[in-house]
Image 1 (cartoon, rainbow, N blue to C red):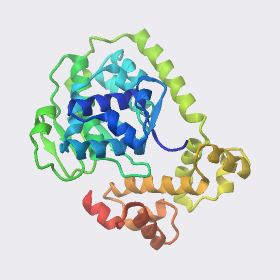
Image 2: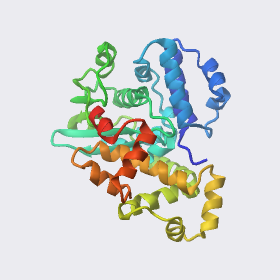
Image 3: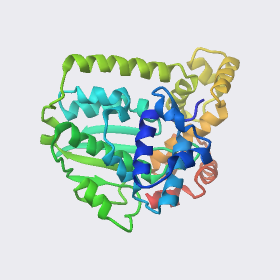
Length: 333
């Protein structure tokens, strides 16, 4: 399968948060064709689109668009798979969040994290990608609420961010957001982010343990290697990202870069539930989202970075992906 997946550990945390909001997840899982029993299997994974549908259905049934914030109430290291324990054994939150970024794909492939120093502290930036469906904003809100609650739980300190950034319009009811984040909120931002004070991030963690941290690093690294590198679709996606700015990559060029024949590449992609054309289309779609969030890039530059020789082909593809033009998409951001 080349579709993005979410670990059962993270999915279980989401289910607990939704059930806390009065949603019957067992019934929704049945309706969506998801396996509720697999939540108890630490090696199971759920499709990204399955989780998006779960969020959508839960919001419909509960009538609560802020239901994702319940994730702040279900903090447990296991939700982050082995990464939670690696984070706990880190010396400081700075070190722990760097580990979270490194091993993020173990938890959920639909999210990209980055953690960087700023003039006044640190910024944890989150990007959520859809698979065939655009991502639910509740997914991003839940991730942010959980990350902050985990930092508070780990340090035993009531950490208050300098600011919390959200993409999209402000909700009708701000109260749940103010209650969970206890910080200045900014909506219609270019990306999702938590801005932290340097002192909060650099304070020693009570659970720090250097030898355990190394052990968890080994487990997480081995899991990630098994999980990613064995998938030719993952390797091909990396090659496509590298080649796209030079024009539309040919299948034979990608096969050569991976040291396999075109036929082998096609067969292995097929085994993983995709094809070269679909992978190219998906990669372009994801990169388009990322590039359009960067205001310094013109639409023409974005088209060329995605390997489109003719910008009108980019506009047509974009409308097919998102049902709106690139300009309208950027205006919403």
